[in-house]
Image (tube, rainbow, N blue to C red; front, side, top):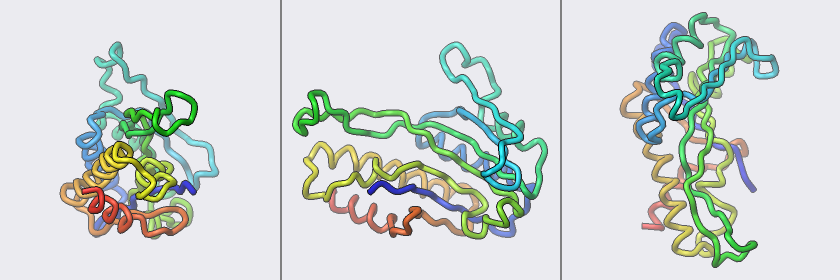
Length: 213
């Protein structure tokens, strides 16, 4: 069964005024791995995610808009965090391409082609009072990767053909590369890759990568 996948990050001696710089650093690491260097959307939520955003902007990133600098990471973060408040969360959406199966003739497995398809990742910075100090569990910054399907699929490794294993491995390598890049370059004190169900996914992904190799 598909599960939500998250990466939580904690920073040493963290202060609210350090949040914009921390967000920029994490977004830069994601851009480095994904090759997508612009923010797709930004939102600011007060008190909890049950509330309507007090700020929201969707950026148009195409060939015609490349001269628009608003969606550049540093500019998008500066605009969204212009007013820092303890009880707000600052969310930024970016895109990356993950390999996914795309049947070309019904559901016949032999006709399945794997293609890189865009997926949205949400990188969220939490004020210390947002959602009753949920940063203690969620991290000062949390990355929401969406459903874990591109990395685990629903099948056992033995049921996956060589082509499927190769493309899942590429997805796993991207995920781990981003995680390690953040650990090395963003000054975090700890991190946790976790799923909503509590399954120990990090160990499973590393084991899968070792098995494919």
